[in-house]
Length: 433
Ligand code: EPZ
Image 1: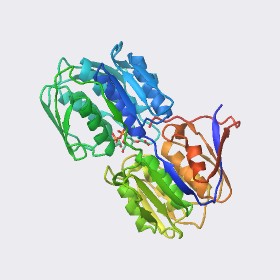
Image 2: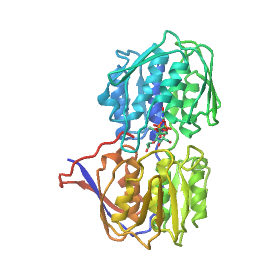
Image 3: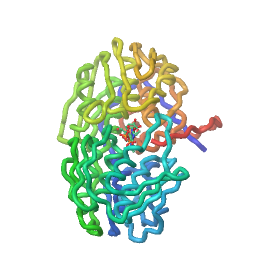
Image 4: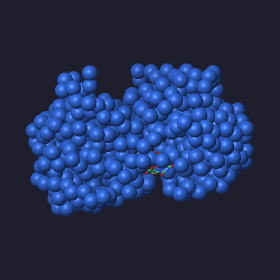
């Protein structure tokens, strides 16, 4: 039975919330464990359905995977029985495509289903493939699968057309044990790339430059990567979601276990809008506001620009800000699915291609809304706690991919929110974020 959220909004959220480990990092670290036969211990691992899907992928390949009830996850890729990731698993979650670089890097072969597009955009993998070819792999696309082979990859100079997060990761994974150095220019600079590079270095890789637009991966000897214990970075998108829920309800919320620098593009915007922001400790951010926020404009960009993953939740805040705001989405072709739902809650938004114009209304009013994808779902939860009256959010499986314990975390801040069975029989929508 699917479930829904019922939120009685309009209460100021107050208190502190612990942020979990980052979904968009842990999935890549899990893929990276394929590079050694030794046991790996990951800590600060969130309990999310996407972690469950990556676990299925790794088990399918022959890994031992054991997630504990606390935040530990043990993985050992000693007895790999297959180098193929089937479509059934990859289509559920496109991050599983990252096993391509690891399998090719360690075993010299991989057959991984093409993820295809998803509900937010085309999401091609051409740059991943071009990068692997530059490293000397023979790559063919047959029957919906990427088939890659190389007796030994050779380091190369690679320039990405666009700083793709996934392509940077796949190339980095493949190049760790290539012969010689790989120089990857126009690389993605997201904090999750830095986390992956730090993890690989802890396993014995030699990677520098992570966090800048040029990565240098000096290939180490095949078989030389080893086991380690590593703590996953905090989830900057989850942290941002609670900050926005706090300020959107004119409350006072502190997020703990965060790296504030990862959230600079958001906190700068919030300060310009009139929010008060403090750092009570090096790993915490406090936000509060007693006044209605002012309108603001954003353009989504690769890190360190404003993240596309926060565009939908931020639009919820803008929907009640004073004045007219403009949001331009430059990363994905179809990431405004929250708009129709926000309008059902009384927002005044018009969309022309990749630009949304939001005229702030004094308040949102509760309604039945869909979480059309993961971040649109976060936008609906924020809208629900901000709105007057009762909101029901459907299609929660999207939210479960990336938000650990959202109900108990929101309740700890004083939100009136519960999760109950959805008996409406509505069809479930698919997505692979
Ligand atoms: C990661 O996706 C994240 N997913 C996304 O988060 C995030 O939105 C995105 O990075 C950008 O920050 C995970 O980490 C699991 P990209 P990824 O490769 O790696 C185009 C969420 O909500 N492109 O940087 O797939 C592509 O079509 C999710 O948590 C090519 O054209 O992102 C897109 O328009 C959603 N060719 C743009 O680049 C390629 O070969 C950015 O994609 C690769 C990408």
